[in-house]
Length: 452
Picture 1 (cartoon, rainbow, N blue to C red):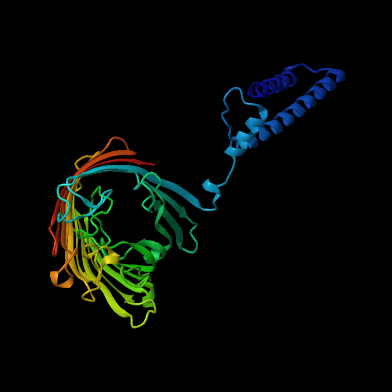
Picture 2: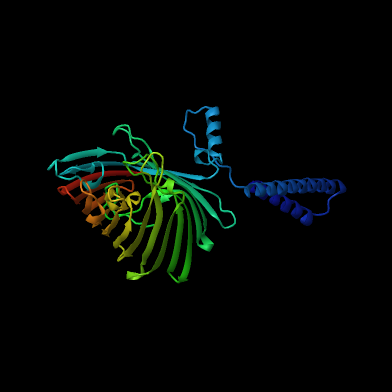
């Protein structure tokens, strides 16, 4: 196109030169030149119009092209182009959907019999069985998460999460799903306020032991589980890098007492449980954010001694808790919790004991845990720590009552890739009983984890 324009311009210049520099022509010659000039002007006008159209077309974005392998039919090419141009979200949802999780295989050996094998809660009494080793191999901790992120409306961000694993029961090779989390979250970041509705972790004691054991220290000094709740959270910026946060929740009480009329003792109380936590985050070592939190709960159980539900006994469940997170350096951190309370079996305290049917009272429980996490490189992580749960002997009857349970653990984890991690953990467990022999066990666990 540029060559054609140059040719026209040269012709126009040449014609004008001939007109201006040539001697006088006869009328016939002048008329021929005028006709030729008119034709040239028409051509210039046409070329200018074409050039304007080309510039307009060049201003449009190029149409996306779909790379198609050789051998596809025209119909297949059209279908591929339709899919490439589709605006539909994954999983046919109106929201942004993220599907993720991991596959985990746990191999464990216990030098003595533990409850329950696939994971370790406590060591069984050696009164009848001693030096009875066990081997476990399971993929039950495999986890699947579905996260939805909704639109932002009026400064409110919305979203939800559903998470399941395979600890819902069933035979070892026919595992059943178990709901871990199922909640929606409404968040106003500018106001530092959020509302959570559904099932998720308790507000109290929000940390967990960095172990490979599935129970993350439950019954060994770490209390708090998951339950349906309605939670409100409000944050306050007190100063630069200093935040104060309040959390409060109404929860579903979940508890059953074996040996009495079948009933949900938490539901029978007719009122929800209450949980709250206040935390302060401020610069600590090397100006890294250190968090200290104080939390507590109160709930009721209604114990029925007969099928008629006559003259039930009301038992209070309560706790007060402390949690601490201290990053010391970029590669070393300290975490830990402490608790004291009564009737804590539904919160995985009291070494699995909440109410003594003989003494007819809630069982007191005290404990805590602490751990150091060392991450010298992006691929290596080391954890070492321990915890205990202690029950007064005066609060439990003779028999299989457990009065002390402890764990000391150490593990190493190596990330071969961003997806695949191999972990090895060694732990020692000790369980003391009232009226029976104590139990001790050494546990070795190998875990293979593939994240997706």
